[in-house]
Length: 309
Ligand SMILES: [Zn+2]
Image (cartoon, rainbow, N blue to C red; front, side, top):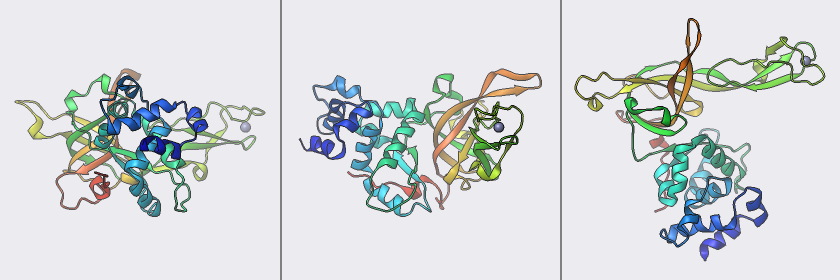
């Protein structure tokens, strides 16, 4: 019954219905903690990632970390979430973390942002970084079915680019009417708006990128390859490129052995004759742990979350 009280304390029924989650689902999630083999197992399995679910999860397991992060938000912007903690709490939700990390991270981040904290902190919206998956996969085992999923690799870093700013959202000013049109820059490509965003103007070809109004992030590229101990016989180590962005750039060096958790993505290969129909896989890092160094600065171990037993 105490768990139902928790629900009543955190969510009013109209808030629940606004987010599309019914009382039963919240109750069943809470029930699962004390009675994993409850009769409503089917309902339990129907739990979907949503803002209220992550609100319950964070209040229960990450409240102290969130408060610490809020007090230290100028120095640290990431909340590291132990995947195994999610899996222990709700197996179905953990599967969604693996299969739909983009959607899940959006919900989880919104949940933290919406929390009413007893600390005065402006624009508190930490990055959600999952870590500590139970299994790692080899580079050579990655397939099309893994694209868009959260995966974990153990690898050796062979190349590291310098950290450089990257445009996240471009601001384009129309030289005719002055209207600024904002456009997210995806896949590392520079994309310009087709036309001025002002309905009254709509002119094409007169938009200029405004650096001072665009949104930038720090970005860095790594190349990682399979570890010698993971190779069989005459296998040559395979490589994959990794995008590292925001507050986790600048801590990895060539030669480092890393355990890295991130989202597998694809980009279209370019050839002399235009774009190819074959795609190239790359990896967007969410968290990493440097395994060979005594100075674990910048690894998630540095920000290890203290879990409630
Ligand atoms: Zn215009």
